[in-house]
Image 1: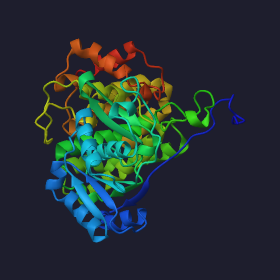
Image 2: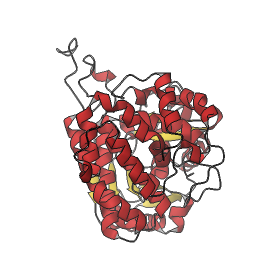
Image 3: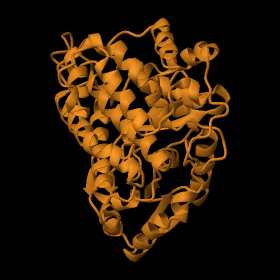
Length: 432
């Protein structure tokens, strides 16, 4: 039966979020929490997914020990690749399929660990291979047929918001593009956010990941409104439904919290109060963009990260060239928001004033870009695409990669052409 308002303008938005446990010491209760999710079944099998650095810091094994103390059987996989690729995800899935079945999956780490855990959960409960589920046009965009087992995310970085979202992000190596898998079933069952686990996050990672928080909030707040377009059928609704009152609330709060904590967290990494505020901001922003969506800066970020040649960021452990995701997002954000300003001047100005209250009397399209540039300089991010190895000659390839991200560009508040993206990229070569 068709909904009665099917022919009219959209009037419905959706909202989803994981169960949340937040605060210093929250990770110490992980055994109890997972046991409750599994009905206190003694010996239930749990796969802990992490990366070598997080395991070396002791966080993953501490989680596994608490699971065992709660009567569960825990196995640790520590092969997560920083900035996951199709190859690294396939290796993780092969490990999990060989050792399964699993009753639950627990991710301990940053977005890379959480996204890897999502892929593992998806492909140990459903048939097919990774590219069956990757977003079109890169992959085949198949939806999972079977429910996933409970996934609990324990973030050790503040930025990705993956603990709140329905998205798994990866680099597809042979296509030199970053893309994702998107489906409501990928949203973690529970997020356990313990700010104490982020104290070991170095300044460079804090800066890049913090810009991811910031852009999550800004992009969801300035996304096209959920009322844009015709009424959808229930089966056609997607997790990214556009700006809406509930997502707006979380995004605005994330911006306000960031304004007081971001610079301190980068400069004084042992400041637990600043770390707690950054963790709150990441959680709030995840609850916002995980429903409203992101748009141009994130769409640009995928080819920027996927086509990097020789850039090595400070404080990242990988020997491979990489542009961290949050950094890739930030590099075109000032010019992207200059482009989107005309769609909602009041939102762009309000966001800028939340981040920099002293700028309250400036009402120009350049206000938000300037606030972002000032922040990026203060936290020592690269000064534009040129600083991470790109040149004017790369614009065509980057535009091609961006235009593949139609799932994200559909959330942009203005229609975006190839020429528009090219202009944003050229203007982002040197930001200061």
